[in-house]
Length: 176
Image (cartoon, rainbow, N blue to C red; front, side):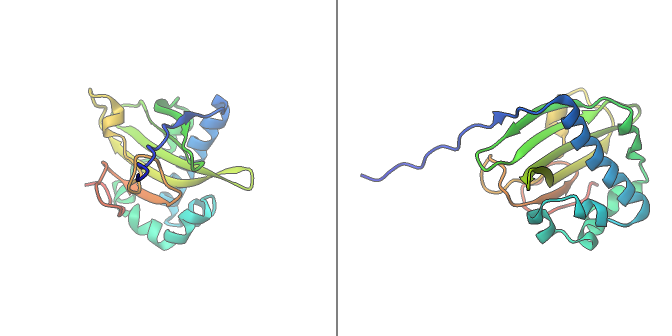
């Protein structure tokens, strides 16, 4: 008798305090803002996990974020705004922590999805999705950008960078 494939266990809530969550979100998005301002993505690259770094050089990050950079939208308002989480921090069996949400602002909101993985006792960026858009009446989680997952619903330790709405392919793509 053949064994059926075991279903992927659902994500579990993370035992992480609110301040740590805010620090992870804000420092990551501030690093992106500063990279967009300067055209230098080395800090964003250097705060990332080794798996993310192996597929995303600073030059590639510059290409990926070119569309967001061209919009000249200042993300620095996230420093004083309170993010609204649409996906509370959750971990998967492979150790990846995922969270998503938006910063409520007018006329544009910043939508994000972030994935982190522990590296030497520190959460390091593994996936990032950022979009800037008008406030939407539908649940923000349907419009929030998603780092493109590998073949299952469980985030893999494979990094991704995505700008814009979710895409079915595993490549990064800029927002329209």
